Length: 162
Image (spheres, one colour):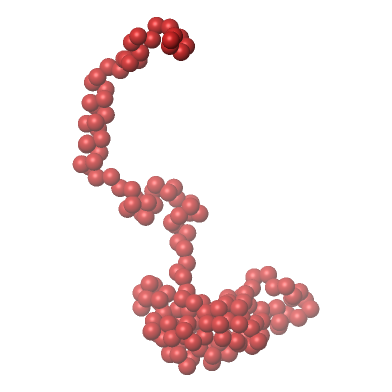
């Protein structure tokens, strides 16, 4: 399955209670179709101190998950049925997952904008256009610019006398 097809078959599930596990999520979303994967991102910096309760700190997630289905139609069915549903006392927000932004594209990348493929595709100039612009510039250089042109008859500064 291509990456684009995978993201079309993946749903974002937000607003999860802290006691939700991969198993409970899979049980809740399996009625809508065959699930390929459930991803429940872990919290890098949990609020609880790991020294007090290491098991609770390890099970802490970030409050959202991704459920990937085998078929995009199943993902749409899950969105239609589970959005705004109550799960472990919390209201879920279920929507189509957005693909992650590339670190190589856009303003946050380490590559100059004008060297990126997307910018080049939008702003590429054909050889024909370059030649036309060069011809226009050459025509401007042939005629001398007279800085006094249009100033004839203005021998006195200020408003015209009545």
